[in-house]
Length: 230
Image 1 (spheres, rainbow, N blue to C red):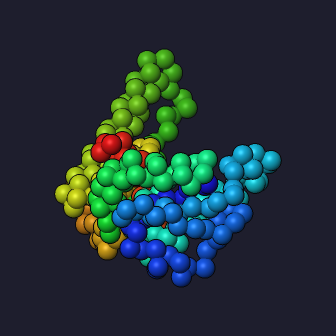
Image 2 (image 1 turned 30 degrees about the vertical axis):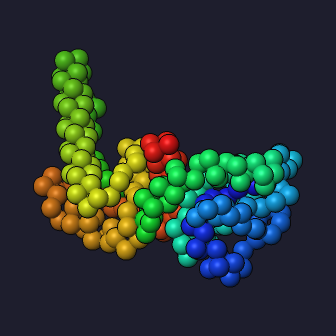
């Protein structure tokens, strides 16, 4: 039994109205206490091993199912490839982990994950004159490196200022890379407003652009949260 994610049991009727199907079969809901699991019976994950395209298609559908569920209710997304031998094994797991999963769902109530990418407009440093030789060339090269370092330090200060603004708004931040962040925020949070405020208060006068994703199920934060509360 292939498992997509978990929701509150009370959300099942809303989910049943959604025109969504699984990777190869229709979806069903396995209920346990106050939990319900979004499940696709009869689909083994190893079926994706036939080709790279089959794997990509399956991942896309996995995300589509979770996005559809997320559009109408709080969902605890599970990693692609999560499966159980049968419904009895799944029910036993849900019963054993019920408290942990319900805590995670409650913590994620009305929350969404958003991808934020920052783009700094970097000033072009003047080139080293071609006629410099020996010590003069070395000193010019050293000065250029120092200017580059100062520029990067300025960017770091800007990033830190942004993180402070976001955390003051109770927005959790997961850093993927220097200028790529995943944010866990309220669904109605105005991230654009906070970013504009950061830009207007920016004392360094650096210019930044950014890209925000749509509201997403809390893919990354769900896994971290389950680890912390288990």
